[in-house]
Amino acid sequence: MLRRIFSTIADSTPQMDKSPFKGVHLTGSFGVRRLESLDWLHSMSVCFPLQAGQIEIITEPQIFYTKLQTLCVNAANRIGIASLYFGTDQLESQLVKDIEENVCKNSQLKVNILIDFTRGTRGEGKKTSSKQILQQIMNSSTNTSLSLYHTPKLRGLKKRVMPDRWNELIGLQHMKIYVADQTVIISGANLSNDYFKNRQDRYIMINDKHLSDFYYQLIEKVKEFSVQVSSDNKYYTHSKWNMLSYEDDQKHFIAQANDSICKFFAATADEMKYHGERYCSSNTKIDTWVFPLIEMGQLNIHHDSVLTENLLLKAVTNSRINLTTGYFNLTQTYMDTLATKCQANCDILMAHPNANGFQGAKGPAGGIPAAYSQISKNFLKKLIECNESERIKLYEYQRSGWTYHAKGLWYYLPGSYTPDLTLIGSSNFGERSVNRDLESQICLVTVNDELRRQLQREYVNLKRYCSPAEEELQTRIIPKWVKTAVVFFKNFF
Image 1 (cartoon, rainbow, N blue to C red):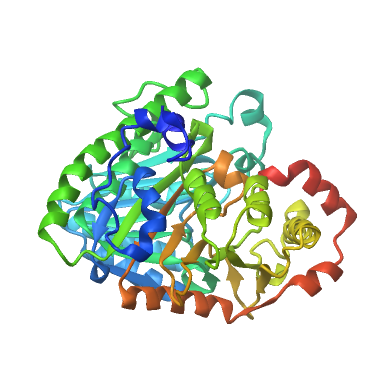
Image 2: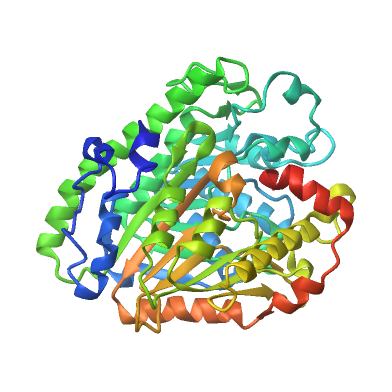
């Protein structure tokens, strides 16, 4: 059902007439003539109307950590965390301690933590894992829960024989959502030392009850079909669920999980239609609209990728798209659309091999930066063949002592010097993001001048460490084994 709703371009097929999201315009339209070309967004997702003053753009990892820590220390009612994993160094340990202390002194505080099963248990028995470090929160209160999402695709012999790290290739919980009371931070950053110090990502903090409710409930919905961890370190299924993703019938599990998320979105749409109409009719200060996007390809849920593809296709002449990804491995659909169908001028920012987190890794993982370079070279070759290398420019981020993990895009309508729209979240726009991992992103549209300037400063801050990549890419030497690996394993990283 959700695949039918979200995998159809909104205004081009009759199937959308059956969608529960059809007509959920909430604000009617953006109400601003210059944004009319973006009105199609209202039929693609639930919309949360906001004021720009509720939103803060965070630009540095240290500030991200401080904001997150402050939220966890001061949370009165709830903390909801969805991340790939929890690190085990000093800063992460302090964050866990802060949550634990808050839980101990506040019996009303509920804590829900969702991480990936394979990544969260990596190294179990040999060194401290994410699950082990989070166990101390579990032992602090009965109002805490730890859930491990396990992909339904990793099972049987594959699950038994694939070692740590390699089993993560099959699929992961990759959403980065951090909720405390009525505030939510959406990011692409994990909760580990590098992401708090010198690993550049993007982060947006929004203070809104309805949006924070949505994301807290989304974490709870994914939690229902994830593996639960008890205070005595045992695994069990949620009280609303009776299947293990890696043991029970795969098709049945996927269908039920899909249905659960679909019904959740439908219920949110109904609620927000009522709230949005009341809120907008009584509030003339609305200047910003947030559209939550998810992608859960292994559960047959394609939403973020459909909207992103639509945005690339509908970009008007003389508009601009600035896109960034820490791992340049765009899907073939995205690359073809950018090269042959998109009308916008584009700058693409990506990590230089020296800013790639896998640089210097042992074994085959050490070849991953070169693999991304090979994919970039292939895309550049396509642009040159299509005579589009002047319209689309490639840049590489390189900053001494830093790695690059930022992702998303900024969209500028003709004549705009600051972004009218941004996408921000966990998606890298690659095959993993579309078909293997659970992803969460927001599409934000604003007419507020100050918020647009903040978004532009965010982009400028990233680009100032970037250099044109075309010349170096064409001369960069890629090992033959990496070229071969790209052909066969491109869709796994």
